[in-house]
Image 1 (cartoon, helix red, strand yellow):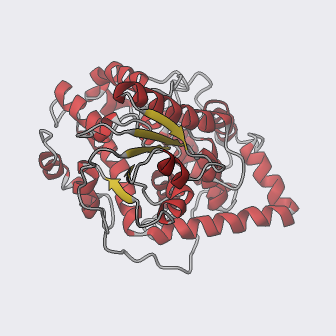
Image 2 (spheres, helix red, strand yellow):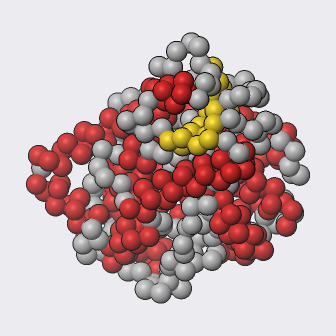
Length: 403
């Protein structure tokens, strides 16, 4: 599978997958059939980059299937929305993760045994065939099947007994779709921290069953832990009220910022064209350690391609905001005092960009742009996924989708 970092590639892949988004997806989605898999959509790299929106995927799915026949796929799309909404209401989960990650990375430097275990796990040398295969697949392709991500995380935490923060960081550095919310909360879910005390324990029988059609399968996973004790954390992550921006309509002349999670202006449905498009890719903000080549290149090229296409479509200038080129200088140079910025969700993209955005002078108006689907769904992401799931039909109706 090749993920070309363009919107046109995303639309083509969506079109190719749609016939299978109904019953076939529901029946086969848990099977990891290897890198040539066609039983899952593999749209997440384009969704994460904002080259395609969840709203567009849902609309296309409901054009091809009834809501009932595509229920499982629709639910999976809403898991992405749920995770983001949950993290928005509990931002301390992200800050706690980054602190724990940094402490765990520091521990590697002082603990030879931990360093050896970490290197064996990330380089595919644990001796557990399934884990070793997935570690190599992740680094070599930038992707893992969702079920494999769960198995890998469970074995990392409960069998290899390595700090979960290090595993989440390993994923985030290499996954092309490295989403702060989905990745962090999924690792916490497996560990028994998201739903307190409810852990996910991978078993060799389950792995063999769902990798039976894998080119290297069934993948062997002998010697796995047969019990899973959830790690503890001192901090309670209380829910905070959502502070979402009001719906905004940028008026000309304005600049549009494209970033790692919003690399195309098309899903934004802008009412008027911008006078300037500013590209700001920050994939290396994912971790203190180097990102994988696949994740870095996809992000950089997605933003660059999106900005280039936007410039051609709108007939406007394109600029790049880098560490050496202050944002304010770009705006001043083009005589622009309004900046439209696709919403920066809690996570590494916000960490990388928000500081300089906050430092802009009062003479520059910043307009955050938040999609209608997120605005409608996030308030329901208060606790478990069920709170969002039972509102799916209502949320789709609210944003003009047939439920």
